Picture 1: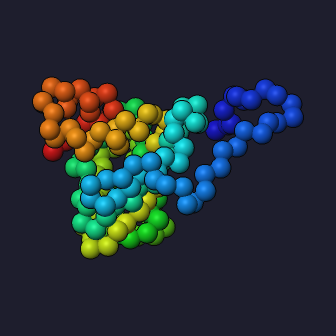
Picture 2: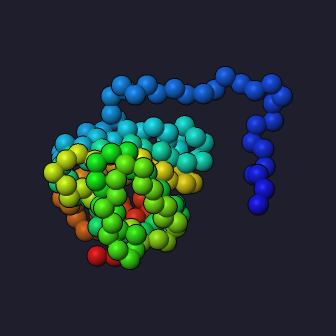
Length: 160
């Protein structure tokens, strides 16, 4: 295994880092008392990855079993208890626990506890997940064809 081909060809380096203070307001608030922070989007990373902090309110539930064809998804638990399905079994995960799901891997997650929970979600390569996060709460009101097109557009294939 070797390093990828260089992307930067300059000789001195550049000032291009992007800082996001911890007290930055969330990008998205959910009806269940949670939030989503867009820490690094596919746009800001030139398609390399997307990194999001998800905070779920108590008993917020979560998505059913699904998989992605083009992106992997990694979960790093920051706090609380997140119940994660790894394709075989459900596990109550806590601070510091990690799960990597490659393309095609079945997975699901939810917060069944009476306390909030938070985690980092990492998608590679980067994908425009922001529209997914912003609209997924509305799709239950859409016609079936429009709902199906939305999930295909966002590389989400349900098994339930």
